[in-house]
Image 1: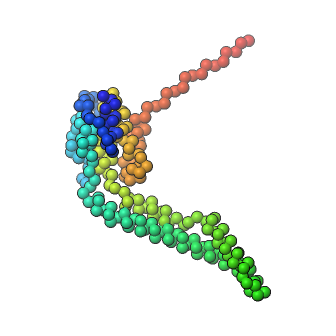
Image 2: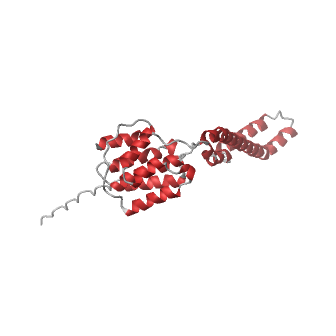
Image 3: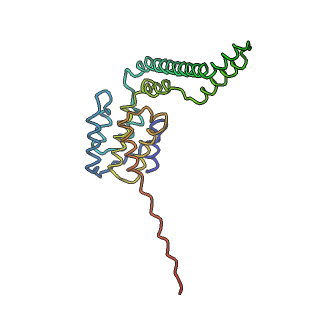
Length: 245
């Protein structure tokens, strides 16, 4: 039964097993219940957990809520697809422009350093009727050294991070529902419930998902996983050596 529940929880992002039908009668502790109610009440209407998730969670029918998530995965907001069609190209355009500015700025810096450092050699070659070969080597060497030693200004990287949400799907409701059902299992505390809660929360920490999860959910998920992790067993005390006099 515990294995079935874990499989169903872990399968919410892909595959899942059938329900167990077990409903616990143990009430959630007050701290978890308060946190859960705050989560459900504080979410905006467009991102609030669905009623078919809220009702069984409130009644501590965790398996029913889990089965709903398995059969009817959290849908994205209606306008999210259209938003991504518009904002994703804008994000990449901004990133490209940022890196272009970075490269241009680095080029100006390298060119300025080359002229400043190589100008005396250029004037010397001109005064003796040289062909400018030494000056050209100087300019090339200085420019190469500047490019290798000086990092890009970072505008492109900064825009990549700043516009990440433009490229992300809206995971607000998905994270809220996963947290709500996981909180139900964690609060009920029956056999296998901790594993079921962890299986619901762990996928939200995957790299490609974590970066798109809203910060407030991200921190709550990590905190919940820390609470679900059993404390490490203390090592057995080592016996002190016996001294023989």
